[in-house]
Structures are given as C-alpha cells and as structure tokens.
Length: 151
Image 1 (spheres, rainbow, N blue to C red):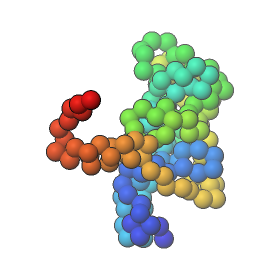
Image 2: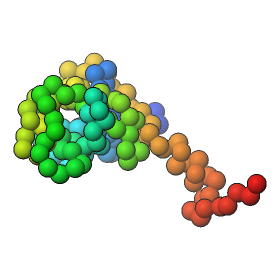
Image 3: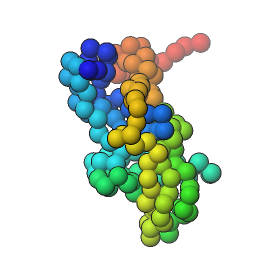
Image 4: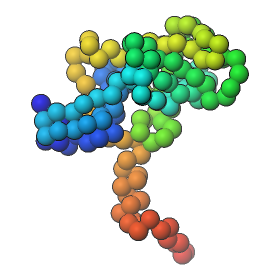
C-alpha cells in the first residue's frame, strides 16, 4: 500500500534490516515494484570491506550474485569476504551491507546477499545517495550551464 502516495519514486534504493534489497523500478499510486539485487538485470557498484577493493555485483537470478572486480585478472576475493555498497554512481549510499563471498571464481566471486526479501520483516525506501546534490545543482543552474563564482 505504499507508492506515489508516500513519495516513492523510480530509482530509489530499497533496504531491509540486513542490507540492500534492490531499487524501485515502477511506481503506482499505492504500489512500488522492486528490482532485487539478485535479479539478472541488476548491477550494483560495491567494494570489499577489508580494503575498499572496487567491484560490481551482477544478479544471477537464483538468489546469488556475482562479484567482479574492476581490474581484470585473477580473482582477488576469498571465501568470507564481506561486500558493501561503494557509493559510486550516486544511487546507493556507501557502506550498506550487501553480501558475503561463498566461492571464488576465476574472474570474481559468488556471493549471497545479506538481505533476504522473502524473510525481511520490513523494507525502507530511501533517497538516492546524490539525489539531493543533483537537485540543488539543478536549482542553481537549471539551464545546465556552469556559472563562474567571482570572489
């Protein structure tokens, strides 16, 4: 029963008590459709907690995600590595709990998300990480042109 009537908009992140669940992809007056982090079309910028190694997560459609580092080469991940959102791209805030690595692959790692949408007692729709900054920038320069500030 939550949609536009409560200010929910497309592209807003959705999280539960255990971590990131997904993002809003459709909104009706009293409903919102969520693309889960485990869905095959969902890419999430993430990082390893221990050293901030940047990576991307891609849903596999089976309840797991594939974590791929930005740098090509042999996988630097280890079983048990904790993965959080990186904040890159401006959609998700940094350091939202995301997943734990369960198996190393040749070019990344297989991980299980911390949040299980089927067993989550509630979900929170939050603002985009850099949404407020973009809105302020647009209000200051609605024509999209950068203005020089003289001292």
